[in-house]
Image (cartoon, rainbow, N blue to C red; front, top):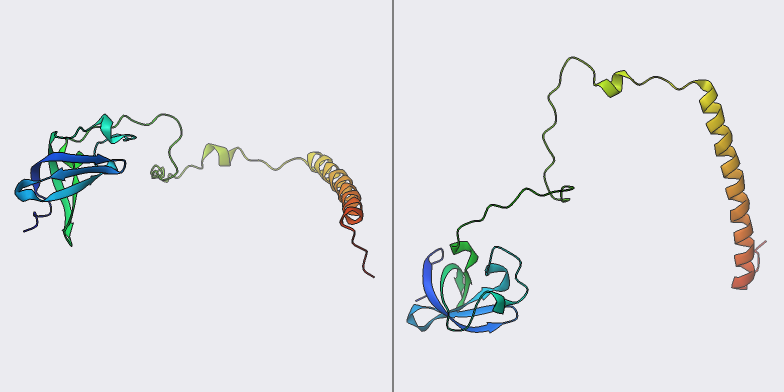
Length: 154
């Protein structure tokens, strides 16, 4: 009879592999504790946490088709993680949006249209950049056509 899913059992580490450890349970059954289910921290080498013959408590994750999946880390007391420092990871939820008020945001209130003289200077710079960029691209295309051996089409 397979052990009940969710039950915590005592077992003995029978063998250790690079992907986990096989644990012998009561009644001669054995199950696998995957490397990701050994400890609450990153496990690079199973030998750093377990030795053959060691008595361990395991939680039965699943028992199907004669295979028993076990977890050691789910029997351990949960560790509180320190608050992360630096930027949030990409999958972290965003903080709640600030509540709406009747007053406009200071950045919105301070926005004023730019003076026309600044726009003209920018437009001139943009035109100069575009003309020099088009000239450089034309030179590049001409030199690449010669290296490809292609002929211009009419």
